[in-house]
Amino acid sequence: DAKTTQPPSMDCAEGRAANLPCNHSTISGNEYVYWYRQIHSQGPQYIIHGLKNNETNEMASLIITEDRKSSTLILPHATLRDTAVYYCIVRPNDMRFGAGTRLTVKP
Amino acid sequence: KAGVTQTPRYLIKTRGQQVTLSCSPISGHRSVSWYQQTPGQGLQFLFEYFSETQRNKGNFPGRFSGRQFSNSRSEMNVSTLELGDSALYLCASSLALPEQFFGPGTRLTVL
Image (cartoon, rainbow over all chains, first blue to last red; front, side, top):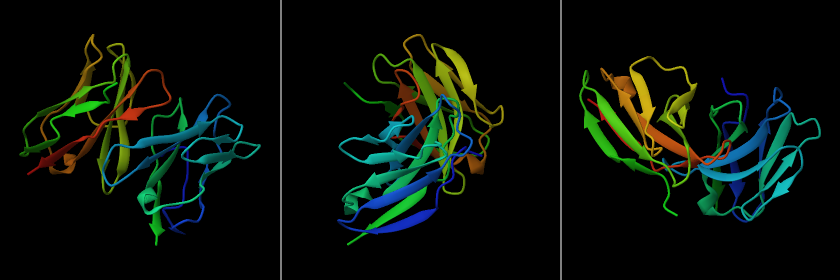
């Protein structure tokens, strides 16, 4: 099994912030937390990554807890096009993906 | 810069046949990883190649094999196809792990 656990599904209203949690309690000191998303059978798309500090880019923000055992991906203003499966993974020691969270953004 | 390309995009085979899928990574990327995606099992890691050497391997039977050429292009081969091998096969390239760039995938249907 992958080293991360995520809720299987979440809903979010359009225009609201989507907060996607991820647990990675066995993460090692040299491992990064990466987030990808996959829109309807396209290849997964990189979103953001971090080691221990919070990170922000044009797509999202990543909040990592101080103990690094969990993180939250934040899409500040979700749109219908953000409907996708979101994967939280740890790298580089683990090449696996978990089942991800299916986020549905509703009008 | 061109993205990751995979050929063919769609493929139909029958049980017992073998198939070869191809992946051309982003120029300059030396790491290529392969994944199988099915509705029931999600995204499963097959193997990763770096500079023509297999560096990581997932938990798949020996019917699944791969190789990487000196130009970093990679091929994946599945022998003695089974119905359960029907899936989307994704290739990802990396300049240096851990960030990966995925191709559009090859959808294999086994009849």
